[in-house]
Each structure stands twice: as structure tokens, then as C-alpha cells.
Amino acid sequence: MSVVRTGETETDREMLKWNKPYRFVPFPAMLYRGRLETDGKITVETQIVQSESEQLLAIGAGWMNGPDLAKARVEASENDISQAAAEAAAAAVKMSGKAQRERAARDADTHRQLTD
Image 1 (cartoon, rainbow, N blue to C red):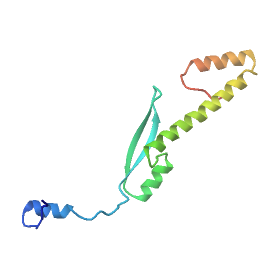
Image 2 (image 1 turned 60 degrees about the vertical axis):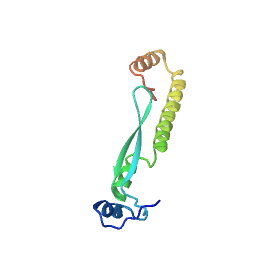
Image 3 (image 1 turned 180 degrees about the vertical axis):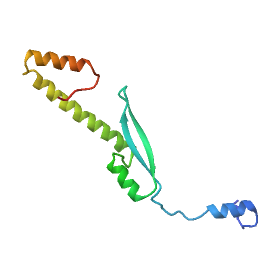
């Protein structure tokens, strides 16, 4: 059995106010940014923008339109760093003994991959 809202009661007036046909509204919109934690896990931060200009500014600052895109961007960045670190390590083999010891000491000071 269906319920007919006539607008005669307070509940009916409130329901009629909210029961409207769907209309797409682009803003506010949610944006996402991935962040690499110290334990190596990727977390996703969120931000809400209220207009297209805010959205364009946020996208320019590294925010993405979806959480999967945000995670993929962090992973791609880390892969680029890994590649550069591997190339630097391969080039280090050709360095002098003193330079290799300095590089080893610098590498021991951090858990991050060094690219130069």
C-alpha cells in the first residue's frame, strides 16, 4: 500500500519539500590525494571543493578526482624514485673508493631511497 502525501500535516510538508526529481549538481565535489606513510602504506586524504575554480586549483596542487587515481599517482612516483635510485647505485660502482664510502654513509642515515 502506498502513502499519499497531501501536505496537510507537518510531516507531509517536510516530505514534499525533499521528494523532488533528481538533478545532478557538480559541486560540492570530493577530491583525493595519496600520501605515503612512514611504514610504506599509502593513505588517501580527502578535500571538498565548492566550485570549479577551487577544483582546478586543487588539481593543480596534486589532488585527484578519485581515490584509485590518487593511489596510482603515489605508486608511480615511488616507482620513478626506485628507478632513479637503481640507476644511481649502478653508477656508484664506477666511483672512487672514498666516494663510495661517503655514499654508503649517507645511505645509512635514511630509510628512503637516494637518487643521487
